[in-house]
Image (tube, rainbow, N blue to C red; front, top):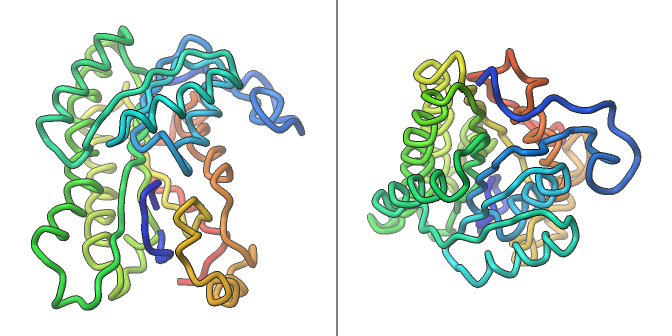
Length: 281
């Protein structure tokens, strides 16, 4: 699942520093998460809202210098200002159409140069547009979904992963979706793209290992801002079949991402970590 989904169907050995201790009971920063990313540079696509925004908040609260990128620079600027006001950290906004090969190429070089390197890349941008029927899926919609959910993450991972490996390490975390494992007629292009992203995750773990680790978080249904378009009564009934009996809150994806980005996960690479509240297949 990503920060831009419109359907509820789902949705290195030298990475960031190891946790400084055990998690506390606070609501933000090290008190809650128990990690230390001081001095690390983290890039998050789709970071201006939803799950991406919560990831950016968490990394910043834990000492990282963060770059957030999405289509709308104004949204990124607003998100960056809000996070900096809360954490006091350096947060850089970037405009990026993650489905565009050339924009991804330019962005990867620019963000590396301007941050002086990248330690963690989180490919979070994505979308699962609604459509009336499988036969009615247009080529434009299909290409857009594949571009945003697969082509862009591949291009950014390939370019930044190569530079991480040359420098000696890093971590890439892809945000996939449970739809890749349990595809439905309502998510055909999205499921195909995320399944491809899972395969890409495993392949790139071998391509850039051992110094660069590449993993994916596989979320179930999260209640991001797009949930306001759902039939929540119907979703509530479906959620009763989950072990957690509810959808996930955006900040509940954060722990998994922080773990995979940190050196606690030093022997975790090429892994697909499901975070779905125990949703049935």
